[in-house]
Length: 233
Image (cartoon, rainbow, N blue to C red; front, side, top):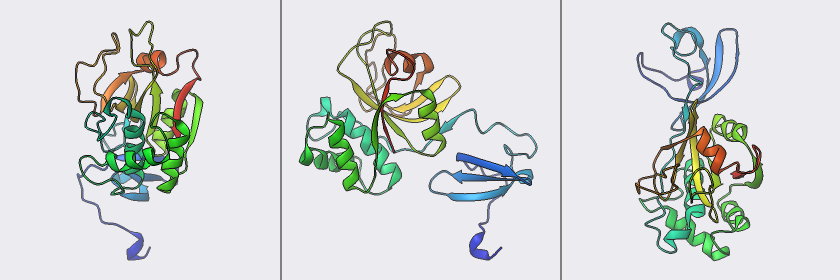
């Protein structure tokens, strides 16, 4: 291989995988986090892919997504969760598009130049103006979320965040799914950290919060297992 087709790696350094593809002849195709590129690696040289002391790389996957809280948004802070969640997706796909601690304000300005923040078609048009094509679905399930994360793509989803877990309610709240493990999903919740049992928010820090499989089942796929609202790239 030519020098420009290879990269030097340090022994003992950890490289987070955001996607693992096909394997063959002792090699595996992987995508590295932090825009580290797509590579074929030799399994025997890597813990987790065939080397000694191999931990599983498929039990937990988390994407390095910037967190944008909605509480500090320049307008309509209590109702711009949809916009902040889509802004997180946009900034991950196109790093540097929304600079600064309040980068989602730039995206929100685009949203309100088109229509209202709560409308799915407005979000679709806003993302299109930044060069990202999405679709709005109302038939998502757990497999949908894991498939997108495995591809290295965060997923904004609409949940019922009010009321107890036994009877969730509300007009809808949007969060951004950034990963998963065996017990549930890792999410950026722009409003804070929700207590699933009550629907209350005891914390305003919603960065990388863990919502259990049962929470997602009750509050996202409400009527049956395939009725989740989501924005899919």
